[in-house]
Image 1 (cartoon, helix red, strand yellow):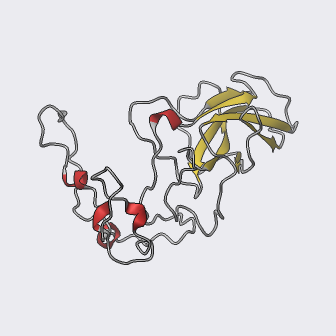
Image 2: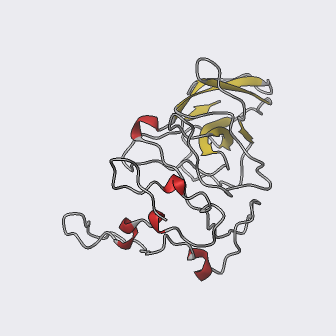
Image 3: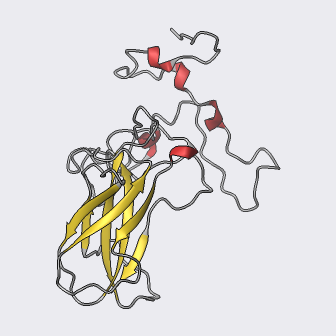
Length: 233
């Protein structure tokens, strides 16, 4: 049964107590906008634009047309098809952003000397993470009671040939990669120890992810970057 909030014509989907275990799609969650491929309106269509896939059942059987294995919660390096929904998306006022507090862009670091890096973050409910070996990308994005994404950041350090390296980096190769799973301090900063780096040039990047280590999903396309990247020697 579909119920409605007092004074509203919008169905209250939270009242479907058995929906989370049902194998039947609840009618109140069917997104009507998914039937539009984006090309029907001349004012919204851009030359060269790719028509979107469409669905009348929220793509619940999308992976049935894929030859890839289903997601298992494991990190499958050969690829997989994930039937999990994206989940809860925050408002634009709750979009996260990260900035390194230490080191700073252009810093020269002592070679082979361990350091404590600092990463400042806003609009992220830090300290929320699952088992990456068994629950990777296996649940939707979640928000806390304030509408903020629950998750954690990663820090990745990659070695470069020089600070202005023109060639592309290989995502399979990195010097350091670690999830910062603690809770940010009162200044919104997370700290982590990093082993000493060999002499050379490096790019240090942040990666903000939701609880199950999926990249954060945000409400609008045109926005500032949520992650930071700096170059150190």
